[in-house]
Amino acid sequence: MTRTEDSVPGPAPGIASARPEATARLMAETGLDEAILRELVHRFYDRVRADDVLGPIFEARIDDWEPHLDRMVAFWSSVALMTGRYHGAPVPAHAPLPVTWAHFERWLALFRQTAEEICPPQGAAHVITQAERIARSLHMAVRNAQAAPGTVPNLS
Image 1 (tube, helix red, strand yellow):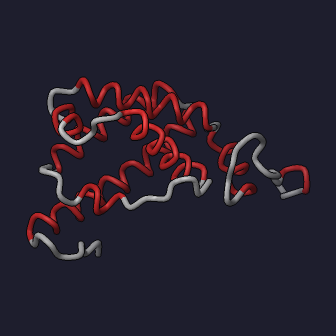
Image 2 (cartoon, one colour):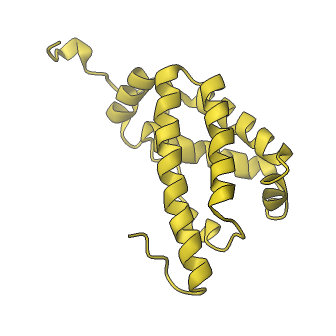
């Protein structure tokens, strides 16, 4: 298929984005939008909170869930749709956590299950790929922080 003016997505309708054309393209390719990402995040964290392994870790650190969920929707909007809505630093927030790769595997299992239930197939594949990359990066940061507390994480 050749690229024509008609096949190039314009700005994403009804979504705030720092890169509206990229966001529109990703929305078209994945079938994702803000409503789907909001449902994904809320249902995923419902499962995390109910999980025997992950629930206690989150409950010990999050007092007010609404701001956290809003932050996670902005994060996934930035990751999945390149909106640029998230302005945070996930590595320092996760580095001191008392977790191992087994915790990340459990997090990924719950995320995969939720994404496959909520998202269109292309969208599920897209966010799962991103989640796997994020889990590997955060695991390296946590492992480095546990090995050398107080140092800057080495993500290489």
